[in-house]
Length: 349
Ligand SMILES: O=P(O)(O)OC[C@H]1O[C@](O)(COP(=O)(O)O)[C@@H](O)[C@@H]1O
Ligand SMILES: [Mg+2]
Ligand SMILES: [Mg+2]
Image (cartoon, rainbow, N blue to C red; front, top):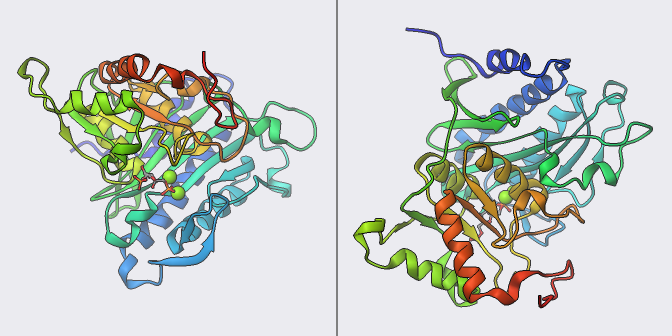
């Protein structure tokens, strides 16, 4: 049987696609994979080690941090600090960005934005969780990298990926040349190529949204949910509903089976819940690279202006034809939400 290609072998092989590459991005992806393995080891035995439950601290979003949020955050930051290829880390769990001021990183040109543990509400109940990462090249060339280097739009991403800690552990990433998935083989401790050239079907029959907030959704979203539930054989409706509460797990399913994942604005979250820099942008890059579509209901996620580290955005993502239909419903039934300024105030067009 042909030995599976490891992530390291694949990255080196793909480096040939980038004639001027010096291996920095390859080493950065290696560092992220190492931290993912360490986090995976703890997740796999979570009930036996003191890693479940609350950490007793809150992050800038006012969310209670789980012990595993804090642990995963420490592991990824440590790997990025010791790897030497990253000059700034932006993390969901840190109020400000972290400037890596070490000798080994003084010439580092990459910025990494990370959601160290995605799906925190599922940690204690053994439901799939994940890690999301986004990589940018610094824009400034002189001196220390600054906020200007951090607040880049999603279209500027050099690479993005996620790790899903589920029944198996997988790392899925893109460098803008398609999407590939690697499964961790615990017997050799290596991520091995298992899902080459992942593509999201143009159509699907799964919709994914937290219907508990139905009363607070824009009319266009309510109409789309009803559309998904109507009986119509010709269009394979009613669709089935799947929502795990972990964005990474819901997106991974959508990437493989097709479908649509939605976290729209609600009355409580007028800018949406999910964060643009380390959740929406990296996931949008991956899904677009797999042939899908990602919007906030009105605009392409990757073209949204980034004004704050922990800025939130609505997201509607997945199979292109399904996202188009949802956008159609919003344009028709919720036209007034065509644009909001950053303060969240409605700007009637
Ligand atoms: O419980 P809700 O409101 O449906 O939110 C679930 C969403 O929030 C998240 O848990 C937010 O991510 P974090 O766990 O990283 O904070 C997503 O993974 C998920 O899609
Ligand atoms: Mg998250
Ligand atoms: Mg998180």
